[in-house]
Amino acid sequence: MPPEKTKTDCWGCRHFHITHRPSMPYGCYAMGFKSKMLPCLAVAQIDGNRCLSFQAKPAATTKSPID
Image (cartoon, helix red, strand yellow):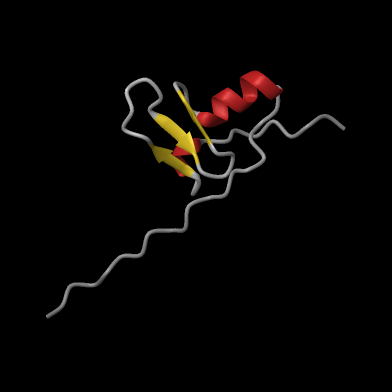
């Protein structure tokens, strides 16, 4: 069976972070690297498969206004 080809998106991953380094603006805490491109794209380019470290960010909670 071929590997699952579902789209993995770093923007929705809990391990993704912005490094604030112009030369390597994106990073992945799970895999411990920084990259010029989104980490999920770097993984796909190097490995040929989707990122296996993806974990969805928890849903944002909304606070109700205080009366």
